[in-house]
Amino acid sequence: WNNRNSGIAMELWVGAFNLGFLYAFMAMGVFITFRVYNFPDVTVDGSFTTGAAIAAVLLVGKVNPFLALVASFFVGGIAGYLTGIIHTRFNINGLLAGILVMTGLYSINLHLMGRSNIPLIHQNHLMTFLEGIQPGLPKEVWLCLCFFGVMILFWVVTSLFFKTDLGITMRTTGSNPTMAAASGVHVNRMKIFGISIANGLVGVSGGLVAQYQGFADIGMGIGTVVLGLAAVIIGESVLRPQSIYMKILSVI
Image 1 (cartoon, rainbow, N blue to C red):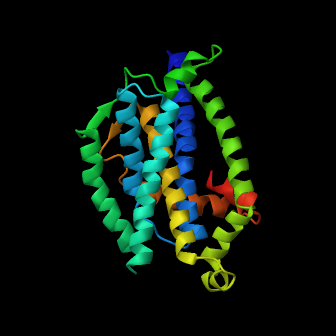
Image 2: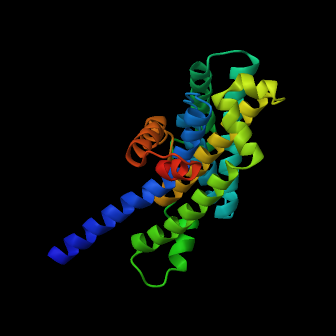
């Protein structure tokens, strides 16, 4: 009995880490808007659910799980694009622009799903694929190892991206838009691009969480932006990063 309870407790702890890895994509999206652009983007609460909704609908339609995640990225990116357009083209406060899109996404998500909840228990998705190739380890431990490898790759790729010309331009646009404009950068376009990429990552996170939990729900994105902000602030407080590599790691 004690061994059984210990095993259940271990699975719960490992499962918590697994969810944390999946939410890291969302936290990175919040990092881009909040830290890179100093833009309080509440769109996250809606685009997270949108990513989950589109992934669930496609998986029920027997679409490849990886293609479903790609769709989650693009649909989330479209939500971020709309927020950026409302903010830059119509000169609406960033916080209000995010609230407008987030509120509109509730109806869109409900229309996409056709109901308030879509179960994925009997569908083939990314988690069932990983379980099918596992070497005999406990399910949660195997998923944790897979997610850990993905996080290392994500950390390296994202860090290298922010050291490219495009990544440096994004960071410059956020920290000093006047200097960026004087250097020939189209500030508004760069801001729209960054917000779109950020919400695309949030959409991917939503799609992954839906597959991991086995369902997509219309209310699963509520409070997501708070989780993302907490991840960014706590991570920076603990690691006190100086380089871009450590900043990305602190978010994860």
